[in-house]
Length: 160
Image (cartoon, rainbow, N blue to C red):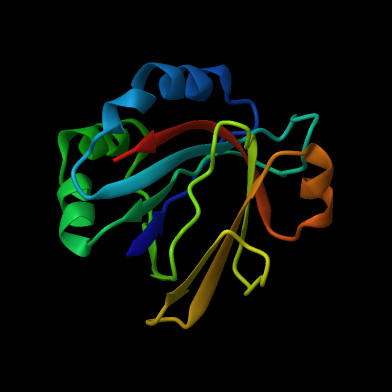
């Protein structure tokens, strides 16, 4: 399996309600997408009360069954539309170690770290740069304060 993420950093005065609305209105469109295990619609608000992140961003995290499915998505009209609106993002990819944990509806935050974390829900490795990724799904805000890495709100989970 392959994990994939891109991060679109938005201006500090960007109305993040637009991203939240985009997720609410379009998130379901990837439910049932062929080859998708899941997509976590992640975003950060620099003014969030329940976690710290220095930037406004849209940073979805995907897990794909295979590269063919991932490439199909990256060539889709939906991804082209995102590129037209925000510019073409740098897409990061990691091979997943083991079975990835899919966040449930109780999870409200995600922490993504580029160091190996034993307690993480997803572990992956980019063999080109030997860069790891660890993803933890969080239910309680207090947990985010103890984590290192980037913390995001989870807007929606699409399941393939």
